[in-house]
Image 1 (spheres, rainbow, N blue to C red):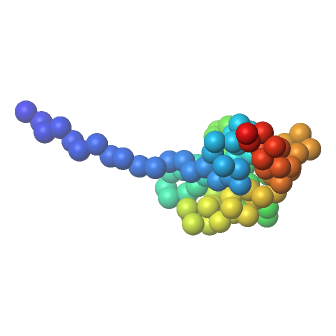
Image 2 (cartoon, one colour):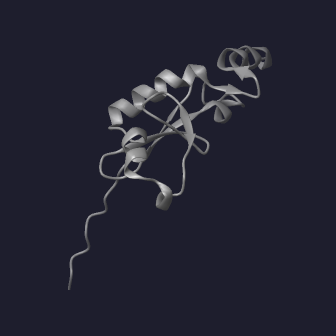
Length: 110
């Protein structure tokens, strides 16, 4: 009888955010770093993916992604986390900056 293999556990997603996790609007301002295989990671915000040049682009379906696009939108983990940390303070949602959201959250405190 075959031996049951040991399960593999792997982290595949990190969340980067300037708002505290208990802030009601936190999820709106988050950036994620998501594993894409072969030790490559994507920096994501909703349906957009960060490029090496610092611009956000819509992330096409896998069958539509060309090698050139992948080369500029996939990073090693350390680089992806650093890029996400650099972008997190710049997130704007419906004209509200991270600073605006933090001020509003402070006013909601009892």
